[in-house]
Length: 191
Image (tube, rainbow, N blue to C red; front, top):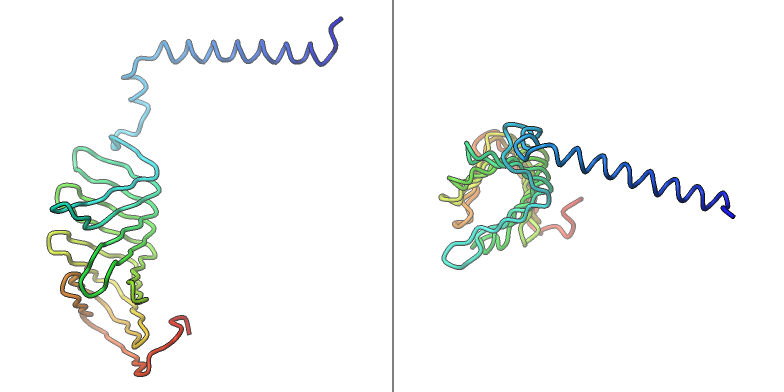
């Protein structure tokens, strides 16, 4: 004797088998070219949870992590979302971490542009904030024309335009500079 539960389970099983067969036949009828045409034209490859390390002479220079990356082969550009960039072994700053909402990596020139809540933090607890930043790997230089805010234990600095030579440890704020010195240093940067 069939109970109502067994009849219901049997009808669900038959429905799943029929649905699976219909989907399988539909996908089998489409060629790979037709499936690829469904992808956006300007994107050649899309990745989630990207992790990329740039090496030079066997040493890590920087590591790029992003929640999402879209590669465009024609322009060698990679659009990035939720960017985290870690520069290794900078002389004056130690390891330096950069985070941003969005970014774009040019694979040919190894230049990176980031924007949206850009934050740089050093091992010494120094922090730099801006809305847009450019990194040139050949020069190992960060730059922006946007307003910037820098905090450390000894000072707070705001201004417009910035150039940072990572290897030399030099920071140049170009104009509208305002500085507040804390000669004794501060225990908490968030005061």
